Image (cartoon, rainbow, N blue to C red; front, side, top):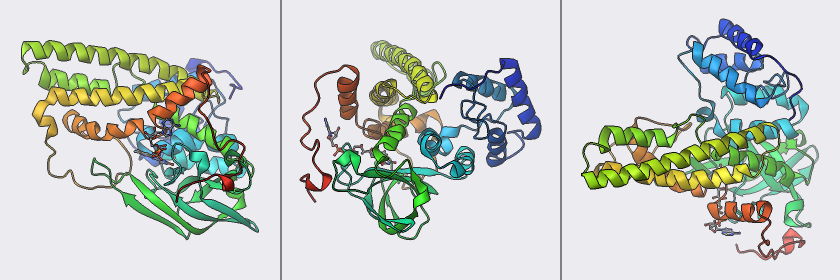
Length: 409
Ligand SMILES: Cc1cc2nc3c(=O)[nH]c(=O)nc-3n(C[C@H](O)[C@H](O)[C@H](O)COP(=O)(O)OP(=O)(O)OC[C@H]3O[C@@H](n4cnc5c(N)ncnc54)[C@H](O)[C@@H]3O)c2cc1C
């Protein structure tokens, strides 16, 4: 999305101050404040006017955030509330949504009133998501959907789902898909929790039995679902591989805090030296990731998320696993004790607690980092083929109608 207009930094800061005069995050709730932020065009400044933005360069968002931080004690961290809606739903809706849906849905995504989920993966189609089997059949002004999705994060609290379904089984797999917005409260949608090693049921199985979706909720055209899905997936990689925007922030900040509070003085000199070297190395890699993520975010906001997203996703997944493993090294035996209260729960967003409980939780949670949003193996394939130009993997289903491709189950 090319910026349509320019504005001086001071003018933008004045707009933020006008927003704060009308609604101040220290005085009103999240929905009221973020609703006003959207209406002032300060939600995503690079979005068009009237849709939460001002048509400015994406770099100007940093000015807004800086001014907000200067004048308010409370900062509403958007990705914690509605990560899939903000990171993936909004850009997809902006690019492909029907005009009449854009404004009301984008506003509620930004405020967090509507949580979004992503209904792509199926029991037989994860890495090979274009091979999915959920069927959508046209019936007058509606589509009737039958199938099963899996690993659907936040489906239990979601109002809207981004659903990829097969509308034509007679053409090769990528060509027969369409993309829908599914109202998760529709009759026939059944959401069942799946528990992870952390004890949380963050994601779900979703069963779709004769679910009706009005045709106007199709994003893009019939059969264009893969193209729309790519927009979602590229934004997912950038959102997931986004690192921390603050130097020394994110997981590495927690590790350094643990080291200062618990590791440094209680370890033997030899162990202390080895761990200090290890943490320094992880700090350097975190900084490299942050800088790559800045580039990826700029590309995403310009409407053209590029391979930096896959680089960032791959690097972050592997790095975060190592950071949290190191956290356990710092903690020693204490890191293996999970206190009472660590039993099953259903989160409504992400982010939790003090450094100690965060480190213990994240050691378990980070196992999923190299699976969710595309596995590290698949990221390497994408980078090898599309960025480095290496020979492609053999593809036995190329050009074959989906219905003729052998599959198990
Ligand atoms: C915490 C979490 C949250 C998730 N949330 C969502 C969500 O909200 N919505 C959603 O739709 N999905 C979600 N997923 C699903 C996720 O996208 C898939 O798990 C992922 O794409 C892998 O698919 P799969 O599980 O079917 O594994 P498979 O594709 O069966 O892969 C199994 C193994 O084979 C490897 N492999 C597969 N193909 C290749 C290849 N071509 N080359 C080399 N190796 C290969 C994989 O890397 C992996 O190690 C989530 C997953 C997790 C863990």
